[in-house]
Image 1 (tube, rainbow, N blue to C red):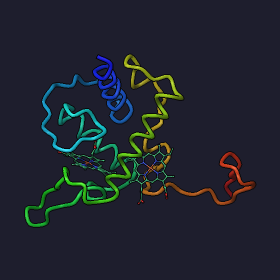
Image 2: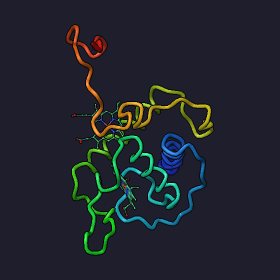
Image 3: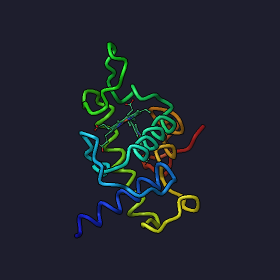
Length: 145
Ligand code: HEC
Ligand code: HEC
C-alpha cells in the first residue's frame, strides 16, 4: 500500500515536473529497464519526459542513448553511456528537491506550480554554466563578474 502510494506520487511528480501534463498511467509496462520512472508509465508520458531532457540540456536522444547505426534506431534500454546513469541520479535529485523543499503533492496543478526542473540549472546546456568568481568559499557567495 505504502509503496503503491509512493509510486503514484512519483508518477504524478514526474508528469507534473517534466511534462506539465497530467496523465493516467496504465499498467502497460512495455519498457525494459526503468529504474527511476514508474515501470508502467505510458509511452506518451515517457516521450514527453525524454523530450524535456533534450530541451533542458540542449542535446538529442543520442547524448544519453546508444544508437544502432545499422538499424538506425536507439537502443534506449541499454545502459552503455555514462550520461544515462548520471541522468538517473539527476532525476532522483530533482525529485528530492521538489518533494522536500517545495509544495508538491498529487493535487498540484502543473500550470500553477513553480518547480525545479532540469532546465532550472542546465538552461539548455549539457553542463550548467559556472559562476565566474567565488567571493568566499561558500556556495551562497558566488558572484558573477
Ligand atoms: C539526458 C539523458 C537522456 C536523454 C537526452 C534522453 N533520454 Fe531516454 N532515458 C534516459 C534515462 C536515464 C532513462 C531510464 C530512466 C529510468 O531508469 O527510469 C531513459 C529511458 C528511455 C526509454 C526506455 C527504455 C527502456 O525500455 O527501458 C526510452 C524508449 C527512451 N529513453 C527514449 C528516448 C528518446 C526517444 C529520447 C530523445 C527524444 C531520449 N530518450 C532522450 C535518459 C535520456
Ligand atoms: C540543482 C541543479 C541541477 C538540476 C536540477 C539538474 N542538474 Fe544536471 N548537472 C548539474 C551540475 C552542476 C552538473 C555538472 C556537474 C559536474 O560537472 O560534475 C550537472 C551535470 C549533468 C550531466 C552530466 C553532463 C556531462 O556532459 O558530463 C547530465 C547528463 C545531467 N546533469 C542531466 C540532468 C538532467 C536530465 C536533469 C533533470 C532531471 C538535471 N541534470 C537536473 C546541476 C543540475
